[in-house]
Image (cartoon, one colour):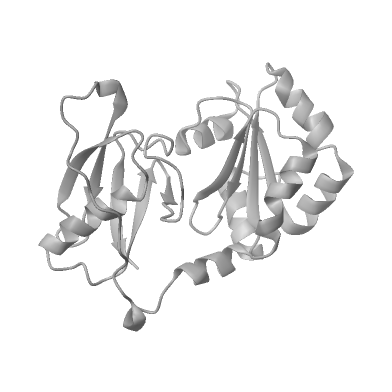
Length: 232
């Protein structure tokens, strides 16, 4: 287990090119004790993590500044929670709330033992000279006359001139529609021929969004967020 602060754990994981596992606990929740006893105390889990991952644990109590920071960074609403984080980009790759049993955890971690964070990053990067504009899903009309509880408003900061544009989505809309919206805005500026990435800027951290994610905009906790568009 890494004994330093969260940013130090992330830096260590990046240097060693290992995925970062974060566990936020609460002494008030019995599930936290179950995780320590049954999951982290499992010999196969402990050995797998010690060899292949960097593990960082904190308690979200009044005296845990680091725990509160991580809750804010990743907009966590319930504890305990386990996060699998790309230490290079800060992206949340996986998350589990409550208890996760040893066999299930090992099953989910298996694909991440087949490739490191750098491998993952390199696969996502396309040489600019070979770049072809992806075919993003069609952007539907902005919802109107819909219950506000079903809506999610997101703002983008474009790289062309720093212009900020906003749009309302349904919370059930796929996350991929953010790329559709961004592409439409870049086309207006004649800049759609360049590859770009979307980064959710949160206090003292950042999280690169994943186009391959199957999550919805609502599930991604992006309501009222400012997403920065940057060139690859």
